[in-house]
Image 1 (tube, one colour):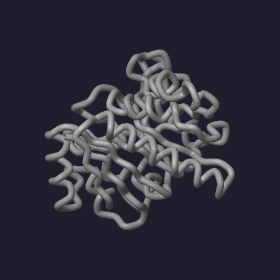
Image 2 (cartoon, helix red, strand yellow):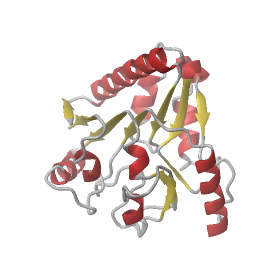
Image 3 (tube, helix red, strand yellow):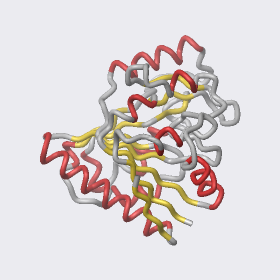
Image 4 (cartoon, helix red, strand yellow):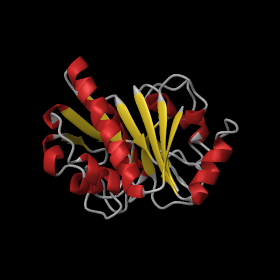
Length: 231
């Protein structure tokens, strides 16, 4: 694990964007295409703004989601909506976006959600690069410590896939990559900012624990894991 520290959020976003674009260029040169999985929410928006101006052959990049909320595509909390509006612009407009939940009703039932999950797994492309965030509770992707599905979602006995999680302390049920899928990527990058997240990360770095799911990524040696940290 490598940790890079920044005092300025803009410098953090620019450095992370530069690293992601460098990795994309190298992957395209080596394998012809590349798949980038990004997280949603408001935290990665500065990264999206910086990344979309990077010069590379975006037509050979597939952008998919680490996780998605079980909301309609037009909902303000829809991660695909944020990615389309903030990342697939400018240079990155030529990239292909692969959303997870293209059709789901505002009152989605278990049947609706699992139908969306099945579709997400049918079209799933293994991500080469995964860019993650982290919550104050140590969750990453939508692997929440209070979600009853967490033990299965973090079991390495499970095949790589999307799974459903139901956090009790966060709105909306989710579809998220499981731990196996995250560890099948070639590069993992984590962006965190703020004192509370720094403290949670420091606790997670001490021991592998389901109470802080990000610790499962910290305490592994299968995939290069770079952390971009801002005060």
